[in-house]
Amino acid sequence: MKSPTSHPQRRSSATNAATFRPLVWAATIYILAMSSALGQTIQPALCHYSKLPTLKLHDDPGKLARELLDEFTALEQAIASLSPREDEWLNVELNADVARHVRARSSHEYALRSAKLHANSVRESLLFLTKQKESRIAPSMQWVFLTATILEKDFYDDIAALVATGGVGRSAIPQLWLALPGERDVAKSLDVHFSRLAQHILTCTLPQVTIQK
Image (tube, rainbow, N blue to C red; front, top):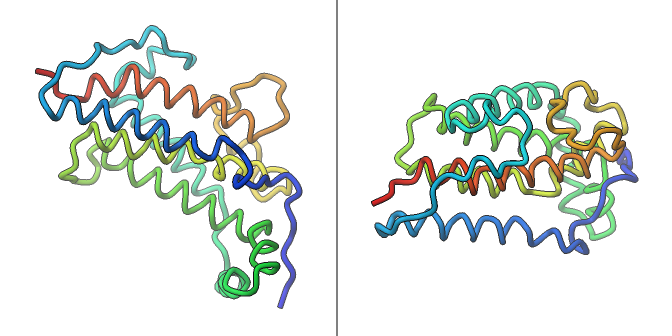
């Protein structure tokens, strides 16, 4: 069997305090959504506080969802799928002893599979938000699920690892995502951008799509 291609830039989230951030954000947004479901009035949309560039493109929830759908669709297509042989190898290694499992999680194959699955998960959420797929889930909760998903730090590390090894071209990443001019650390730039996006959804998008009484 082949040995994994190591990604030295891939970081372990197990020792990173940011691991808990998605849970904190998701819980905050969930409470906001539930307050509306119970008939309570929530804050107005505070879009002017957004840190996203070109705000006029983002202050409308429908426009934002369509823009994000285009971005994540293009990214998912840019990430290669594993061959059946690679997929089988990765499954074997992940279910082997601890040492082999750890090595497999640092492999090129793991980064490809993980990043593509994550991009697909976000894209599926956006298909509902753009009404290209029917859903019985309230829009407010759909935005909650999306926000929790985009704040997954392992996704940033996977993309950064693939860029470092040429598995994904830097040009495949939307320029807006590389939020820090001159910053060579792709994972850090993605972290900053999606944190800003999550804040925008919390303060601008979610109040607009949540029924207020």
